[in-house]
Image 1 (spheres, rainbow, N blue to C red):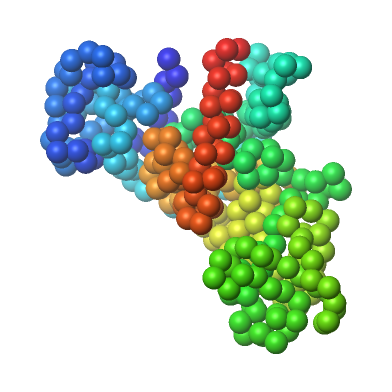
Image 2: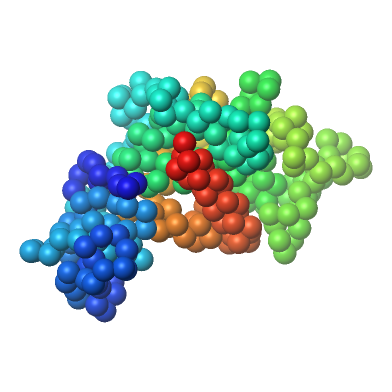
Amino acid sequence: MNDTAMHGKRKIGLVTASTLNVRPDPSTRRPPVGQLKRGTRVTILQRHDGWFQIQAGLIEGYVYGDYLSILDERPDAGFLVEQEDLRTVSLEPPATDRIDLKPEFSARQKLVARTWNTQGGLLATLSDIIGVDAAAAVAVLCVESGGRGFGPDGRMIIRFENHVFWRQWGKRNADVFDAYFRFHPEKPWTHHQFREKKGGRWVNFHGSQEQEWRVFEFARALNAPAAMRSISMGGPQIMGFNHARIGYDSVRGMFDALQAGIRYQILALFDFLKGPGTSSPLVVALQRKKFEDFASQYNGPGQAAKYGELIENHFEAFTNLRTSA
């Protein structure tokens, strides 16, 4: 069984179904051992895929996660990045937990295996803390950045978003912005182009880290904080304007930390996921394997179906490898 104990502060849940069956095991094959009414508070003992083992008075058993709202008994306003012990957890998993790469692996299988083998130690520890399957964290990193936090030149992987720079700086400096940046007016996350000289040729720049950094450095010369708030950073591709959500007082502090190493990028991912507790909508979506719902919140609704499918495919690839190992 793939059970995960709910470590840390005690977790509670609130029944959201009108009547919720409590099963003796995480399946619907056997009759329920009891039923709970909407609004019943339960203690969560452990997680098993989409099911939770719970206790409510004299009733103990398993309920399906779709009908349970997970809460913290005491919300936590702290950040994982501030916990000293997490700065020394091994990035790599134990040798016995590594996945042996085989020539017959597909490209996706190789990607999830390499990501796990280089970052799985920390990913497993953090996944246990917030109560999600480590396969979900592997999948998110693979989809967002190919499981990498840095390019061959040692610079952090970034993506400069023209429409965000417009909001952060451009609309107050429209003449300058329009001379060098543009995007689709109705679908602002698309058709990003840039030129370095007025009257020069417009070029597409997404897909090339060299070009992403070229545009970013140009924007940083115009306004450094706004430019840093307008890039998604590292393996998890978290936007700079989210710096306070993941524990940084300034976007420069976030930029410097994530540029310093993959560990801080992974910590940033989990701080972003959990928010001020461990029952954020992002965490709940991953716990319930609602990957399109997750993508809608993490990547935006514009391409939720696409990213949700990609995350699910990588999740399944990793899970199958781990099951067959």
